[in-house]
Length: 180
Image (cartoon, rainbow, N blue to C red; front, side, top):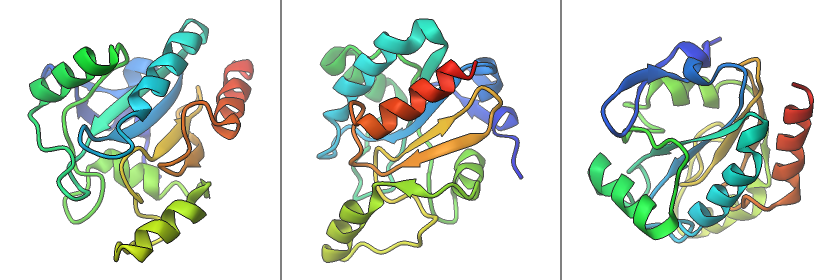
């Protein structure tokens, strides 16, 4: 089992780190894209972050270009877009691959944690109708979310179309924050 807090990652500004920097916090790890129909979720994610960060919550955004080329920009362009368009203040990491042969080790660990995806049925069926396939453990699309508890373990996984204000997601975050 991968220790997710020890996997090397890079922030969009180039600084090397690990998620261990957020040890003791409740984290929502999200693979993001700037040119996706779900990109508007940045707005809700920023509100969620602002509402809960004082209680020990952080969102870690990982741009990925794995789905129809919907994240073509450089790290600097992605940060500029997120800041100017959605006033994003949560950490944005360097672009990575979240599936396939070049899948980043962080996402290898997240997808093999064995946590079932909440709410993936409708989204999975919509994607299949457009010819998109994938295994049940693969990242389904942009804006899939993994909730990591204060102990560094994946406690929940949410389909891309589960938004930041969805009660299933909010309740899971609140449960983890209360367990603190």
